[in-house]
Amino acid sequence: MHHSKNIIQSIESFFFLVGDISRFGSRFFREGFKSPIEWREIMRQSVEIGYRSLPLVGITAFIMGLVLTIQSRPTLVEFGAESWLPAMVSVSIIREIGPVITALICAGKIGSRIGAELGSMKVTEQIDAMEVSGTNPFKYLVTTRILSTTLMLPLLVILADVIALYGAYLGVNIKGAVSAQLYFNQVIEALEFSDLIPSIVKSFFFGFAIGLIGCYMGYHSKKGTEGVGKSANSAVVIASLMVFVLDLLAVQITDLFYEL
Amino acid sequence: MSYNTTKDILPHAIEITELKKSFGNNHVINGFNLTVKSQENVAVLGQSGSGKSVFIKCVIGLVKADSGSIKVFGKDILKLKQAELDQVRTKMGFLFQSNALYDSMTVRENLEFPLRRLRMNQSQKETDKQVEEALEDVGLLNTIDLMPAELSGGMKKRISIARTLINRPQIILYDEPTTGLDPITSREINELMNQVHEKYKTSSIIISHDLSCIHRTADRIILLKDGINYTEGSFDQLKTSTDPWVNAFFNT
Image (cartoon, rainbow over all chains, first blue to last red; front, side):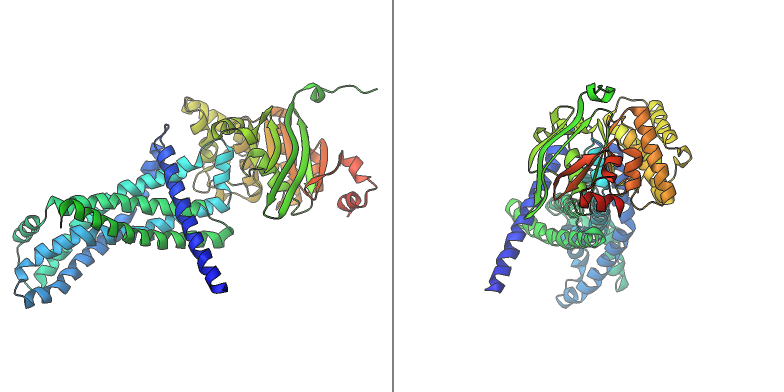
């Protein structure tokens, strides 16, 4: 009896959370594009989110490209299709590995940063201080961060894709000898717009979800420093989960349009 | 025979009637009434947990009251839309107990923040002048390019007062202005509050349980108990009160 009551409460709080995040998101659309737009803060956040994530995203992408190639080779060799390696790896990177790995790294790095930063501002009453001064803290803190993550993530994904392809090139050449020209010719031949466009489009959604959830968790932080830790943690966990959910939806929608 | 003072003939800055606020079954404010005349400093005194901070946050609209009315310059803030409330807030300043300085910004940026958004047509030269004037008022012009983390507790409080003054508020709400400060710094902050009052002719509500702060700064004191007005009077009147609770509060 007590157990089932707990389950019902958990389900209720899950739907409450979903509803509250949706309301928070709709407020972004209502207030985010109203004048005056905080360009300076958007630029600052874009540098923080985009530029400062580049080394981590780049290194991870390079390793992923390299490892994917090394791991895929034995299977293709078994089927006598080793020459297909650049094509197969590039499609995997562009369609899935690049966007999802980049989004997960950003969910960890950016989501936690935003959650902790806003959470700390909330518990030290800095958000209240903005509000009482007659300015709109939501517009300054939330819309700028969501816009920056939404715009920066696709750029990071594109860069990650390119770097991962270089990693894959190295992987191809570990046990083979393929020139850069031949490798990249094969990559370009294998790729179509139906691989690239959905991948870029879904990364906008990944960026939006990471920004939205990081901001929501931080903005609703409670109970002092413990609450800040929880906000940062929840931001990473929920944003990572959202990346997979959105990826699943993106695959289904892409399937409708392109009949993969 | 009684004579009206200047404060008596000026309109009320704040009128609060039958204010109520509960959190679940915890009835924090139970019908509190308060009138603050123009240029008057009113202190609200009460034990820890008596709802003083909740009350002052209701006045600025950070906590939404359940019922009653809070009229600021005749406008009931409980009935205002967000944009109208923001407009009223530009006439009010709020000094947070924790100072709430923006820790990622310098002192200059802390003070500029509201100006950049509320007075967008103002030139940088004019903004700089205002920031410097506010810092001069609190005697800390030399800290203009420091970060809040580089300041002492007393300095943070002064900068927080300077930020409160930057919009030239007509009403200032002080939430525990001297809590956590040593007696000398507390005295300096009290003097600063009086200087601000003299210079800018502000009305104030001061929330505190620091009797020396209340003594130095308040014209009138209201005691809050169980969410309602328990009694009110001047410091000397309350100090000589025969009521056991008031007596215990003032003479323990």
